[in-house]
Image 1 (cartoon, rainbow, N blue to C red):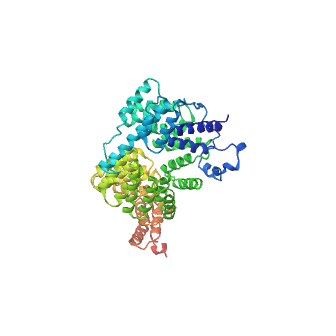
Image 2: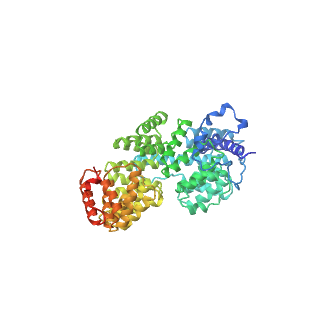
Image 3: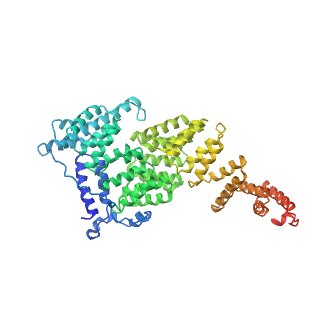
Length: 577
């Protein structure tokens, strides 16, 4: 059997098993990967062409190499286990409980299964109790603090669930789904080490539950923790590693994994979106835009991940495209956190910051742990000069994800605005630790070092050098390096960076005062070095300008003519008609 056919069979069985246990998010994920597997040409029929239509070339465009099979050599296949169907006698009770569960009547579902002892029934009863506790926790939070308030409210079912699941685990009376729930409960209670161990056991026993992998990923906050996991070899492990690499900011490693997985899952929209997000983190915006356009052609009602696409359009200031995307998601699903963030970005780009905040707050009412909304709302408060509100929003973001460099950067900006550079510097350092390839973060830290209170110019120079090596698209670093070296009395270094800055401005066809400043310094510097030919080149270019720099250039040329005894005296107007 081919690896693709094996993946199909495993996923089809897993989808039924996951749906039967009400793990719908994991079931949806598995179904998306199932239809993403490239069809066998021998079995290809017109009925399944909608996932093949003209997208293969675009989906392969950004791949570094062609992969012929997944998983890589040495990764073993684990046969899909036939889960113990222990509900034969009391199957009717399970069906009733599942119906209540699907109607979000969780306590009724748990009550129906109170006397059932089969593993399947025990899982659904415990899962229903867990969700009933989560639902009540959300209600109490709203009652006590409002939809966006902080609260110490906890899920009151966790203690009893931990006790029961722990006993079942010790007596070996628990299946992989029960282990997943046990790991989730342990994580909620703060017992992360045991939660990791239990979740590893769950995914090793049943690797197709993406929800279990996702919970395990949230507990892998460092590379060392990831490497310590004793995971069985299976192609689902490749999905997990690709995802966790992205979370750990190992974007190139993540891209390699996803591109390998595309060998079998050629038409997976999930993989396509993850590749786009990784390239977004690498600031490859042109490629990201192409990938998202392709995604929307193949999945026109998709809302998931489209907020990342809106960030790209916002950064590129594509008003019409962002407006179209906002209208599209409104018509598809207006009350999704992603939709609200897209609309918020649209109003932010229009400069309507109050309206933008309104939509970010709406996103948080729908999901108060939606990280992007907290960060983006902080940015809007910075624009509105509401620094305390910005700081609160950014702090809420880092509480949710301490690895979010954008929130740390926002905190640095906020404290810089309040004239507290020491605090700002602390937060900028945090941001560059998590995203060392972003030139904007290094520039912000350099400017902080330049402040009057710190005035640590040598440290600022180090930061600007890092920014210059990180594709400084705003062309700030080279100019500041030249000016700082000039201030510190390093004329050779200043000339080096002025020259590099000038070359860059010419290559990008830029105009402005920075060009005049560079020409003036280079002309003066080379005259002082008695390198008259090079000085003349820059002076001659200054004669094209109409300001005081023109007269300065004339004086420099006259001075050079006098200094060059071998050069006959002549009118400087000869150099400019």
